[in-house]
Amino acid sequence: PALPADPDATANPLVATTATGHRRILTGDRPTGPLHLGHYFGTLRSRVELQAQGIELMIVIPDYQALTDRDRADRPDEHAENLVLDYLAAGVDPGRATVFTHSAVPALNQLMLPFLSLVSVAELSRNPTVKDEIAHSRQAAVSGLMFTYPVHQAADILFCKADLVPVGQDQLPHLEITRTIARRFNDRYAALFPEPQALLSRAPLLLGTDGGKMSKSRGNAITLGASEDETAKLLRGAVTDPERHIRYDPEHRPGVSNLLLLTALCQDRDPHAVAEEIGSGGAALLKRTATEAVNEYFRPLRARRAELAADRTVLREVLHAGNARANDTADRTLAEVRTAMGTFTC
Ligand code: ATP
Ligand code: MG
Image (cartoon, rainbow, N blue to C red):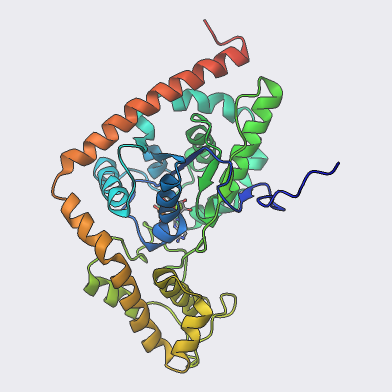
């Protein structure tokens, strides 16, 4: 007899539509600056919600990944601590989540080497996110790390056998590489790894004030810790268009639609309803509406963030404990990988 239809089944196995049946999530943020609204609505809010549902939460801070598009990492430790501050302010439970830095877990880099053997140069070179990052890179020459970081990211995900990865849209090509590596490892050696799925939110690609992807490193972000005045000033300068009537049309009016979506996310509404309310009020009214919505929604988070910022030892302790837990897990997985590969056990 035919099995009943799986309500979570999706046409695209890369993307999960719900977290049903998943046990462990891994996701992360480069230590290149403070978190912004794109992070919050793209992945951070989902992480907190999933943790509340009892799913184990792992967060990697891929510090070596700061070197993909710049020659030197600028204060990665300080940025890592500030990421922990943002996580805690957003509601990540430090007693249950594992937050760790890539460089503190050496076994990850040992996992990366066999993983590199499982993907072709052609597969690495056609990655559209890597191409976009090269276009925005501060380096004169493209380094080998730029091409291979999706593979060390695969190690960051697979070492803990995460099965769900809440991320923004830019991460989908990387997750495809992770799934390919898991599948090929399982076929070639032993069935060790799940093929993790991406979980996209309602805002998989929030735009910054310049109309491009909101990014820590592109000077177009509104950070979680921004003051209300700073938020107002940044939103006043956001790229929109001169048409007076406000409509939600992401394809043709990306700037306006992005502000409508941002408002809708903060107020748990439909962006079309926000557009109707603004009607012919124009971009100035839209920006004022968005500013009020953002400042109101983030007021409690920002207050918690200011309180937590007073004691940085707590932030370091979270990382310390997370690094220890991640090392245990990575050492265990590396031992399994060596056994599976047969010749790497001496
Ligand atoms: P950088 O400019 O240094 O690369 P970033 O803002 O792109 O910083 P990352 O650390 O690269 O942030 O990404 C962390 C996570 O946040 C990833 O899952 C990514 O998909 C997600 N993310 C980043 N920017 C956005 C955005 N604008 N909208 C939705 N999700 C985003
Ligand atoms: Mg990025």
